[in-house]
Image (tube, rainbow over all chains, first blue to last red; front, top):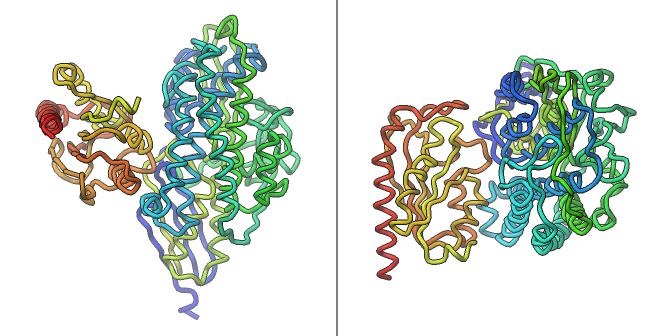
Length: 434
Length: 165
């Protein structure tokens, strides 16, 4: 009896292949899972604090610094929130085209990195991308070529590849010419081909039979696959404007993490990100991506977190195809930005970072000084869902030896592509068994 | 852009100038930029993101990388490693950056893909303060001059070797 209640401890000091570093702790008493904790040490609260007292125009450049992988998401959510506060709408025309286009570049960069460099080794049985590259150099090269094209989109529209400097409240500092944008057509066409090849490649990977049904939350654009705007909806009936985010989504401290955990006031845990977007908006995909998903065996919804790698590949197709359509329809604007006059108000902005919903809320004064800021990144929202996923993984594989169980846990985390680099510096993994 | 690197010697300073001693590589690159034209060197600054590094150095004959290490040595300690044919030593694996792969992994990925210059020399200075918004620590600041001089000497040696080849 005493033996069956033995505490079991599995510890890994570094969990590789996630963006950034954090920690995880699992405690088992016999076969019973007692605790599952995803620990995040350094949330972006500092940013919220030092945004106070800064000008409303500075928010996109300051918040872009939260993450080197998804700076555009921070910039788009910030400018939308500030424009909301100032009472202007940039929802159509060339400025929105450029915003969507640079967002496509970020998705291409981020997804190609995650699919091949971080996630693929799990499926092909390698410890890391270096080991994988020795046998499968061609797919690593494919990723590098796609990422390079994503960088080119970011550099042309954003002024540089990382932490772009050309976005501003109201639009852009400078709008590219049609001729400049045409230089992206050839590399993006190759991205589209490589993304289609990625979907086909991902479709033939071995997948465990796993079905998880968290509540999925994503933006609803109404017209297109969600990127840069929309209401916040779920597959359990949530349908709110970004301004209602705070009424329905609560952030709370948990002892094991300095990052706040988000939950739905009414129903608790929810998931944002590629699976959520796909489950809520697969019908909005452009035909090329929709057909690629179907040919890969995906239904209109997907509940297997391991298959998020296929969904990311489908989103790569969507991003490349959408980018090419945006370039084809681009008309140079008369002015690169709209005039924005500050006023005392609260504004809300939400957009779809590669990893999921990113919400910003700002209160500004009459002269545009930021009085209060709130930023809720996707990984903060997904922490509870990741912990629940981990709990299910441990329960399913409780009899595995420690090192194999550890690997399963790491894979379960990587399925969600957490962007801990927004907030932390170390992810070490501990499984503790009674 | 990359064709311009064919046959060239690249010096790449790595890091994040907003994170204290992590900015040492960037600081060295800036010190060398002034004399880069005189000596015909191509000096770059990068964050250390592996795919960017692979792209930047793929057609170069030789690359000299300047980074901060966090190995437990006294702050300001300078080390030189030749990674042309062997991995960096274990203490340099991983990285103080917030990204998934560090310099050591970028070099090994380049080696696996056949995208590594023939000569890869890494200079590293031991850092100890990596706080957001911090300046370089005094010990690392003091090490910059000898570090920059060593990097310059190395790059010129490689260039002369290339010219004779």
